[in-house]
Image (tube, rainbow over all chains, first blue to last red; front, top):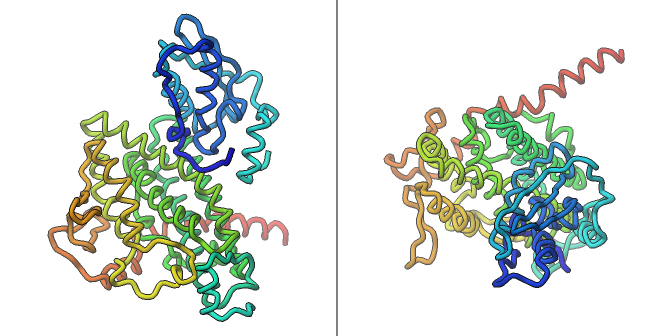
Length: 125
Length: 316
């Protein structure tokens, strides 16, 4: 997939929301999160390895999120992007985001696809 | 030096030829590139002290971290452009530390003080949008390969700066009252400041080496239109008054004030009521530089001198 410059957070490429509740809403939640791009680098928060887990109970999505640094300048934007992407989905009543600092993020968490995109962008890992 | 004549190189770059090294450059190409890169580098560099002095008005620690991240990015962008200048024989050391304040080539807008949080966020919303407008055009059109590649990283980072500015403009505008009034006051002086930044109108523009050598693609007036196409709707959405609107008949954005006009840097006031002035007067104002020119340049250069002297003192 070619990498290009997007609106911060990738809002110009978001596809959602779906018209009806899919058979596997948890998988659809992960797919939606995979559209949320880092506010600076156009790879997704899933590809960056920022998502430690997702639960879905009675319409409440609980996202366990970490950041690449404790002084990440984009924490607020990432929260906002995740919430704005997931909230309109028909199986989502509410989005809860929990910041997780332990274990700390390392670049070992970046997925292979994320690595390939970063390479294309000329960003070393 | 190159085996191309000036005319041959101008023709080749318009056919898609990408210049990769100084050996391929004619003197005219090298000089036009040096001017373009110096303006780019100086603009990035001088945005750092301007933003840094205003970041102290940040309303929270996290927000201050965001502002400082922007400043760090701007310094890195400056470093990239100065580094590219070294490839064509310029000295980064001299460009950053060896010049007098008035010799820097950044726009007059970055010689102005940013006096509160609203001014900082409108600066990142307007000035960084101008930066993206100019650099996106360079990225898409430049015939200089090393610059084209360097601009990928710069473009990605500038989108975050812009978002920071626009998100905060929205927040303050939605809050209404004093917050919105402060944003409006910032818009009142920064909108015309950014319009002027794009330079002479096309009808008066002397021969442009940057277009001839395909160092950029769009003219000054076209770039002004691109900037307004994002900025005017943003202001309308936020209920802010911007002195420009879309003209259906002309199919372009038009200004609602005499352009160019005189600016009072002390009161941050554009003298719309005094009518249009000549560009000679604008150049005179630019040449005289703005109120923060010396302070900003000194803030970049000062510690280099101090620490350098301490280190030298210890070593002798």
